[in-house]
Image (cartoon, rainbow, N blue to C red; front, side, top):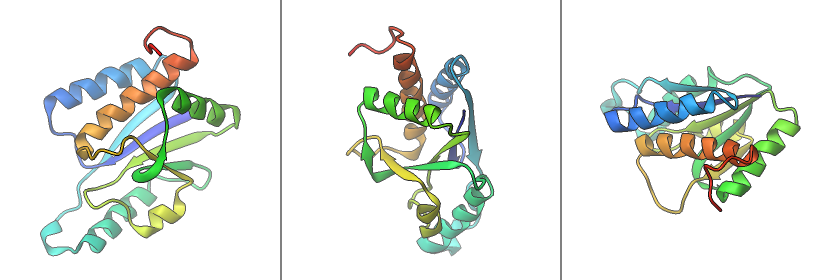
Length: 157
């Protein structure tokens, strides 16, 4: 299985970039993983929220193939403990999912076409975090999930 994390916009803060890179490098020992940062939509001052989400959706749809399983990181999504999330990952692998894509949307969330394409929604917390921080939190949880599956000591229950 291949896992891709797609996010709108670049990660700007150096400490977040370093943290994300740390977990991406660790993930390589477990899974074929890639992180795709799509460029921010240009001239957003002239666009409504709906227009901006539609432009972001165009970029996202180009990254997704028909057979991909797409999970949106969304506040309305299902919440998992770290152990439950590792079980979710295991179920995807056992279910012969070829490509699992997780998406972090732009500042206004997702266009309706992306919601319709999605196979599920996951929420990382009831709290609100910046889209920049969610990238780090998610790759850390992905790493934690695989370390749980391998019975490694990274996760202490």
